[in-house]
Image 1 (cartoon, helix red, strand yellow):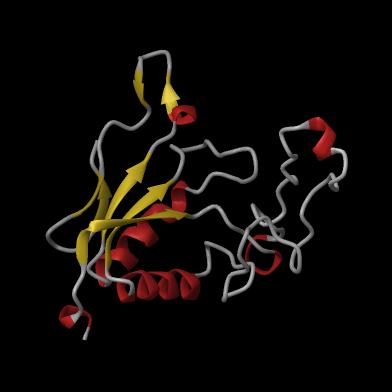
Image 2: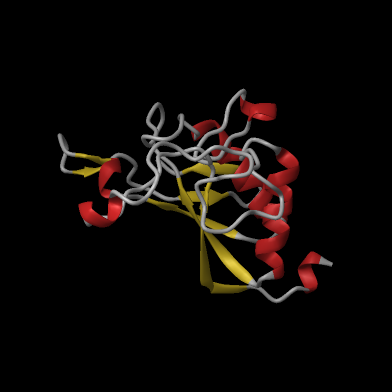
Length: 161
């Protein structure tokens, strides 16, 4: 059935694996980030300060159908891949940091990359990495990872190095 679906490989979807919840991760990650203040201090003074308080108040403009999920939940990952395929998008642009690094609101997630690659492969999706300027190695004047994520011909997921 998946092979009969039309997928457009010129349609890309940004995908992040930094979300966590107490049942899978022992705590909320990214759902509870700091409330972003308004850029005008006079206006900012009239808004609350602090952090989001999941599960009802999350750091997102939209409440996910799956609730404040964990990116480590294999059922969530499978559901996401199914939803992306159903939307006919063909490429995941995966936000992740090189080994041992993370953004200010989470923890390292490099151990999730193989699961994402395998799930994407099962749904005929391609994956590429997304790199921000914070993920740049200034000592060598180049990216911390220079090559792309790929899936080999036998279906195994790898990082080309």
